Image (cartoon, rainbow over all chains, first blue to last red; front, side, top):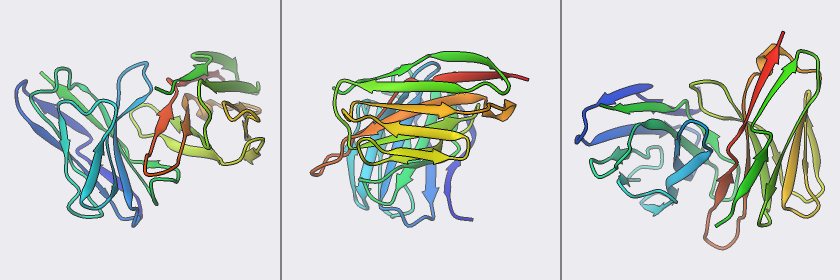
Length: 112
Length: 113
């Protein structure tokens, strides 16, 4: 089936540890995005990539890092520098940067 | 930066009633998108609007792109229990090499059977 796959669905980490969230798409989309969602909030953009081997900071990039070595994959690392990492993380992709985005199922990260 | 005001924040309605929600922006957009999110899931695209004044339907859902390009509304007719969820609007100002998709804070819809 074509789509966007995020894994794992739930993730628990100890404070101070880095953690990497996976996002894979088989839609042949050029653009990919990471959003963070907190209760009662809209989606806030962390990083985006318009094409492979290129990515840009979004509105809340501090404490996060990404890579885009393959078109299908856009992993997000939540580093220990992120002061409030517990949140619901959503990955999305679009044909290109100028078209509507489609979302994965999300990863709920809890840092204890 | 661009801000989207989405209202209402929440709605409690009876099954069968019609629902209306809207988004207004301080800036103009080229595209308006409406998404629905079920609890613990990713948002699903409902309707995409590309032209000012455009009125588009998807089953019981109807959305319009405001003439001023600063607003959009979503209507749901004859609501059913599975309409429950959070509805998000999103506006995109595309141009040059800059991408920007701005989301509203969502409208939580509860439908009583």
